[in-house]
Length: 275
Figure 1 (cartoon, one colour):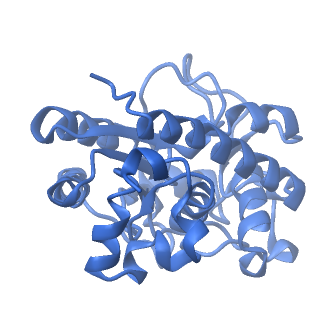
Figure 2: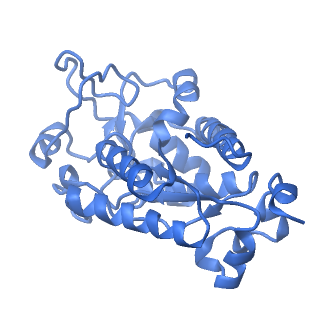
Figure 3: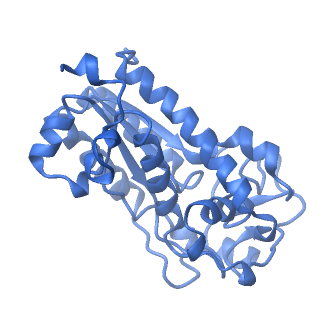
């Protein structure tokens, strides 16, 4: 069968993770797979503190699990995750790694661009460290489109699960390692969550106009926090109330994220490129 005949079938139908996760495939597996798909999912995350109750790898684990769920439904390859990001604001707690903005942009761009050499036409950067490194990945997407002729997309997880988040939330503020991330981890990696150590840390009641300490808040201007800012805001490392998190909420967030990205991948595989 040619690619047009096989494009509707997820690669995972042929036998599981080793049919779409590049780190489990041989080059000949990849050569065969690119006859059925030209879409690559790249989980992009960070390794940074997430309070008392969540592991350092949250921002990488979430997009990786979401990518696998996507590839189980539509033809797409999943790249090895990028586990280090722009995390200087979290260096006030041990275990955090951070790289400079320019280093991060160059690395992600080069990783994604190299896939064009072996048949990839569309790259989706699934960003688990959303808000903090959105600006860098927007630049990467532009570079990939202009300089490498790739149909590239920045996919912050919070954007593709925002409707579900608005429906299920109980806390008034969820910013870092709080209701949304904790719920997702309860759904995706429950054994890594220490709910008995979760603690609510509320940020200041008021923020500057056009800014908000909330992932779904009124953030109409770009802004950032330093490590000193974070240290002053939270003694645990999280901002918001993770005690309101549940597995059911996490499943709702994950399901909406997967549904939305699946829709995009289907369009891309059908040849509807942004050109």
